[in-house]
Length: 226
Image (cartoon, rainbow, N blue to C red; front, side, top):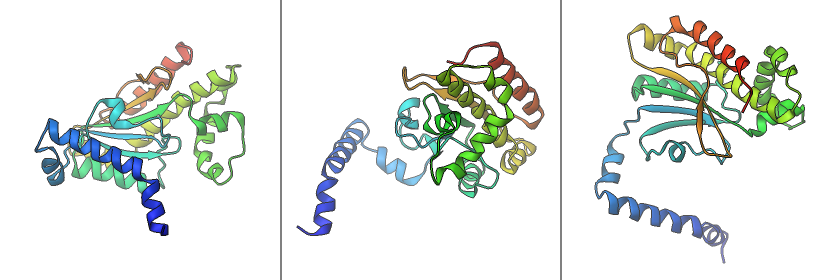
């Protein structure tokens, strides 16, 4: 068998799954793919982790076309990451999303590596951004003796920091300046129960950012990490 034939054969289960899914969608709504091909109109932008256990559409109970997605290791929003910033700009300025969801998850490998100070090779360069969050909140983390609880708390604090980063981008500032309605929310997903938990309050303007940031951290300090 040719190399191409081997590749197709190895993908056969996935292709069969795809055909079954396509048939189900068409049976439920004969015009579904025709509409989807012409325009996507999502209300939500999901900025989440690359972890394969955290699929945005399924978790939110939404179909393709209903949520725009950007994923990277650690659900980070870095001011020099043109990939993430381009997705954000397109979502806000072109698709006119109404909600930006920054979603972390408990059991995140990147967070765990930072907490355990584990070597990860090339990924260490990217995880430096998570290390910066841990260093910024070292007093809060040092007060937690259990490693898993400390990782859960860093996961929550990282979401709060990334919400702040989203709000400070030129894309969000300009959107709010021109009166566009878009809210930024922080959430953490639980792998053990499949539930999303809000972290802090939502932000819908630059004037609210500092107040919500301070309030979100105060809420974490008041309760144990999940």
